[in-house]
Length: 260
Image 1 (cartoon, one colour):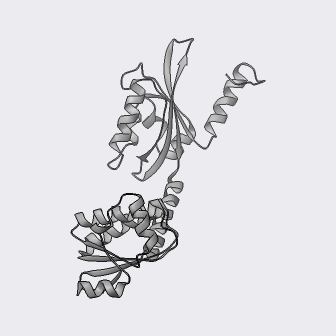
Image 2 (image 1 turned 180 degrees about the vertical axis):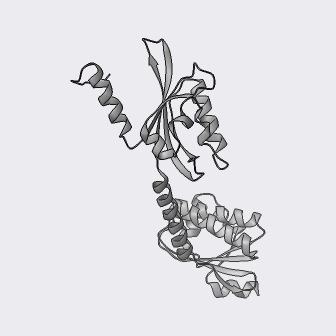
Image 3 (image 1 turned 60 degrees about the vertical axis):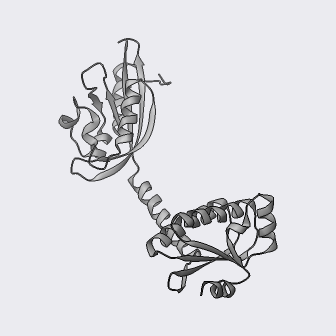
């Protein structure tokens, strides 16, 4: 137990008051009782979940689960309890009024020597606002990516994607995901990728373009590269990539002449 100066009942009363006023929910469950019910819950747990003491004590924590709760997360928690392991997981739970909230859950087994038994301490932290912020950020990043990788339709079934600036593995992978989704939705027959604006043809860029070629091929879309530079060809050869598998042209105009 941690260091303290309080003695006897004063210590335990102060401890309980401190626990009740923390900003996280704290529960204790007893696995020696059928269904591992909650035997203690602090006031913050009641405030977070909206459940009152009679709804909580003597019941298993599964009352927090709902229709969108991840079954795999529930299974991980179940296995951790069965094996008396600690677990840290973020799970979608539901308040008494039915509103969902994201619960950053920490569960640890605690052995009480005087009782010769193990309890489970659960700490619940409502991270809903954090999750919403992360989702908003992801949406913003997707919107920025969509703007930074504009697919321009120039003829029926034909679009052009101009790539500009520096490319990293993360950017090329995100572009591939964005492009393949859009191409599949619009059912484009041909995509011309314009490379004259690329600053550096590193290994990740080369491999990424070949991966994009393979993905589009699976979708039935032909990839044509324009603005090809000697550096691209040299790097392809160095990486033992077969450039002959991709149609290449000096400019978009030349590529369009071939298509038409």
